[in-house]
Each structure stands twice: as structure tokens, then as C-alpha cells.
Image (cartoon, rainbow, N blue to C red):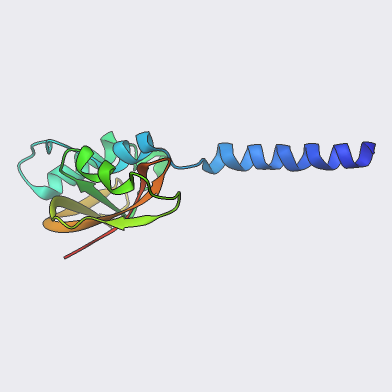
Length: 139
């Protein structure tokens, strides 16, 4: 009996450690990483990406995130995709939204990004009736 209890304690501790290290994506994470509405103004898409990637913590601790997409629409336009959807569901908008793709072009001595703006459909992953993951965009 004591061995069984110890086994379950070890499994619980491992699960807690993994969730703390990797975390379960949340709606707040999604907003922070991918939403910028109205779009923050910069003189160029490259300048936009270089500043926003730093502001949103994607260049922290000497690591440069290789790619990120910012969506420039009211988050409610994406929230409606996830209403009454099962967790892990992937849903794509019918409408096109303005987005900015930021792509890493140099990582040393500092992270540098190119930026391209498009009008695209947006595909999100849902959890708890809200988007928590940007799965991609399509023409």
C-alpha cells in the first residue's frame, strides 16, 4: 500500500513539474503572443517585428523565436470560432484578417526580423471555449 501511494505521489509530482515547465496554453498567452489590435504603428513591417518580438518576450534569455504571426483584429472575431467547440478543436475563420508575419533573419548579436503583412484566414486551436493556439494562416 505504501509503495502504491509513493508511486502516485511521484506521478503527480512529475505531472506538476511538466505543467509548470511547459504549461497548458491559455487564452491570455494567445492574446499576448498573437493579438495586436489596433495594430501598433511603426514606419516599416521590419521595425514593427523587431520591436514587437522584444516587447512580447520572444527574444528573451538569448533566444530568438524563429517565426511569429500577429493578428490585427478584435479578439472577439476569433473567440466566436471556439464557442461550443471541444478542447483541441482547430477552427478556421471564413473572413480574412490583416496579419503580420515576423521571420527571424539574424540571431547574433541581437535578434533581427523581417516583416510581411497579409490578409489571411486564421486557424486557431480551442480550449475552454476560447482560442489558445494560433495554428496557422491561409490565403
